[in-house]
Length: 214
Image (tube, rainbow, N blue to C red):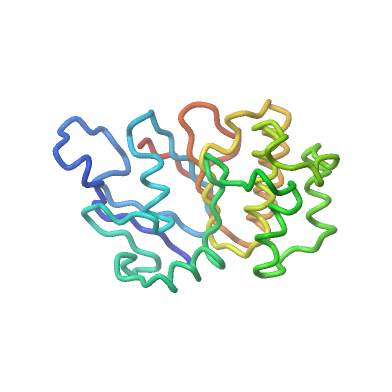
């Protein structure tokens, strides 16, 4: 997948609003593979909704969303499964980790779908993110900031053309945010992937190719 395009996309819930001042909704824009994007938003402007559209969890919108000029509203369930497994990786704002599993188990449950990363690489990421001592700790006993770092590792253990990171550093200090950004961008460059980061305030200090205000 090389391009994600939005053509006059507008959530149905916003259809009666006349006060939208968005650079995304009701516009034509594209996300290109290999580029880095920041989507800045205020609460209530549809950030989570945008994530849901690109991941195929919701389709309650007018306009057209395409992947390489293919209309996503025509995709089957198997199409979406393939996309989420091989083409788009998502770091969820709410993380969606399994609290009863350990940090390593949460990562490996995804890695085993494709055997994309070695255990050595995964352990190196845990070390770099200063959570090497938490690999066998259950997620439910870790802080939210520690969980965010685990969620990043999980997002990277699959092939992807685009990485969608939804508020990835909301609970991290500047030091860990910087390390997280370095790891994320190194893997994205290695895969030649595009990266889309959303934020309602604090965001990674990276060299963005384009910023959109939602």
